[in-house]
Image 1: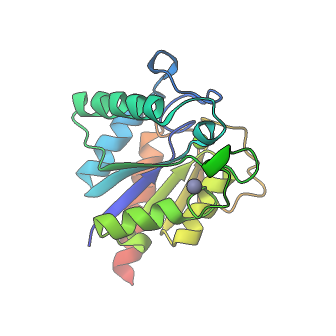
Image 2: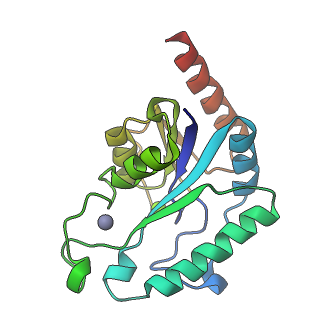
Length: 192
Ligand SMILES: [Mg+2]
Ligand SMILES: [Zn+2]
């Protein structure tokens, strides 16, 4: 079975901007490509899992989201990085319009996207990691049973005193810390 790094999008891959949906507004956070190259080098699949309630709220369309996602994946591939999958949740339990107003299993903190990706790509969750900028990302990682969940400071303001994250780092650009987390996670798994 494969192992994966699950990465939240906004605030982890790109600078957090409310309801971002245009290529012009998408700004990669420094060091993201380097971190993803390291993940690939260490044998991890790279899977993006993103809450996109802006779709359900009617702020932007599925098509606009898909266009931006296609562009993002192309930028990664121009850097030699394969993004294995990108999953999104368009729902919102209260603010969603029509069919989007639903209590779903995919909106983080629920683990649905991680579980679906794990099933589709035959991912061994305990050997996998989650990176996110919100506690909901960390909760989704834990609920899915990933080995380690890592909170980054590069997005939404975080409360480091209450987080359930295993690690807190500045951003994916903190490459040496990212490397150490991966090494420790691997050692821990091998010891089992
Ligand atoms: Mg985020
Ligand atoms: Zn959903």
